Amino acid sequence: MEGWGLSGEALRTFAAFQYRAREMSYQAAYPGSECQVIELDDEQIGAYRVFRGSSEVRLVDIALLPAYRGKGIGSGLLLGLQREAANFGVPLTLNVDNGNARAKSLYSKLGFRTVQEGDVYSEMHWYGYGVLEGEGER
Image (cartoon, rainbow, N blue to C red; front, side, top):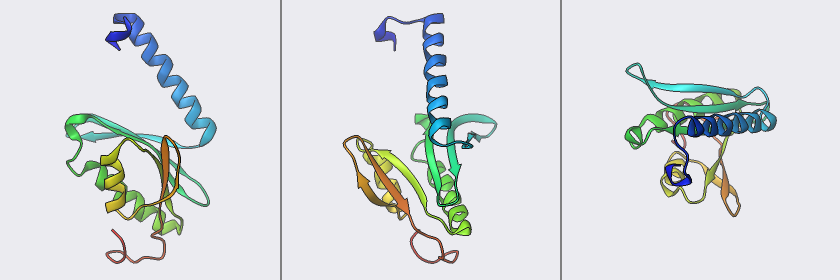
């Protein structure tokens, strides 16, 4: 954002505005969704937002600091959400940026399938309900 000529207080104000706008958008689209901070050794390293509806568990957003990507943290979180969705008998769903090949690869390895591909985002679903622990796609 430095390239935009913002620094100091202006940068903080802009970031706070963007955060509030994103949170309002998420709450409008997914009322009751919950945001959780991801911590490792008492350090905040990311966050994720989950919506738990009657017909799906949706990973609305996930972000990890770059230094913590590729270390199994996101995979562990997703596996936990897969177990939760399976327990409720609903799919785990998400949208992924089409330009994020690393994330798409991870989701595919974990058994997600693309159900709709858009210009910017693809919707992916994991249908693991009815699958016993340790069996099926993982």
